[in-house]
Length: 227
Length: 227
Image (cartoon, rainbow over all chains, first blue to last red; front, side, top):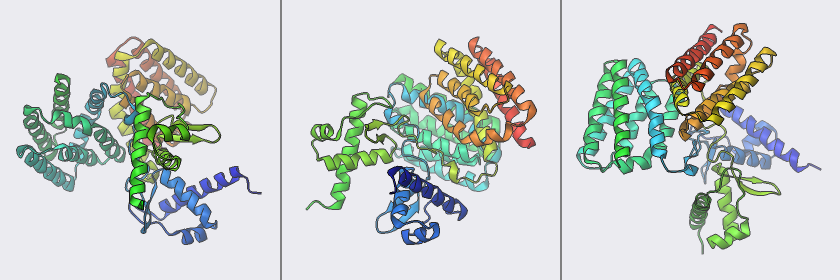
């Protein structure tokens, strides 16, 4: 008799083997996985075991099933919807803590970006800046384009860990941005600081990038405190 | 006829309602959820819908099912096994990028800890330090106690975001620690810097905490580069 425990272990083992397959074949986020029949042949286990293993990898946010299309590597493998678990945090003061964290991380990242940004990063940053400026001047919500700007700076650091941490923090902040967007002076100041940071990165001026990013986030914190 | 699409929407809606129940009832990580029958009464849907919704929350790492015991709020709700998705990153230089990230974050956090650590934090930090020192002097692997030390400092910042980010980064680093632990001078230096940081936090000396944490991580980076 195959006991329950063995079965669990087998599907977990096979899940690890599928993970190895993904790595060895250098499958990228969004790439399609071989189908059940092929996987069952490659890994020499039953189709029902493959199905169990795929479920495990889906729950780990490594694979996703698109109905009628097949199984794919998640766009952000391993990254859960709420990786910091903020849904269950006490909302009181959360926004200030998020800004405190940004104040620690982002000025240094801006300096790294000034040092390492590639031409395509700077171009993407300029596009994001112009879109955001347009949104603000037209009185539209600029949350998304504002985030883009900061996420591109994180990308420009060329550090894959930083590139992933900043968007996670910014995703948590989205709601909070909505709270400050109706402050009249807010938009103007955002344009001012973003432009200063953009220029500093263009000029490879690490000190200025750090300085203006710091002031930008401190300014945001000040506005939250005033509310 | 209830079409598939409606059914998916219903179980997702109910999943959100269960999430709200957890928040409203202030259930903490590890707390037990009401059983299927009770939930089905409270939320006024069938038991099979409750079952589907619980599955969704399990896949989001919010609930976990312990066989024969019931359904519980995850110990780290929302936090996936590999929230930064490092499993799928190019391993080359990953360790240096992890240390670069720590170099940005941890000195500032040490300063916050010096400012805000509560008595119980300092006590926990002293215990972690002594355990680590013992491990090193006895030639044992000190990876776990070393991590503990850094994670307690993050906790001492009293910032719930920082408290969650630091262990995530440190978890990614574990393998890397194993690579440096056999460097003879390494253990000695680790004891030296950890003691300096501990003293600075005890004395509420923000500057010293920042300075020694910075030197500690730079020292670690230097050892990785030498390898």
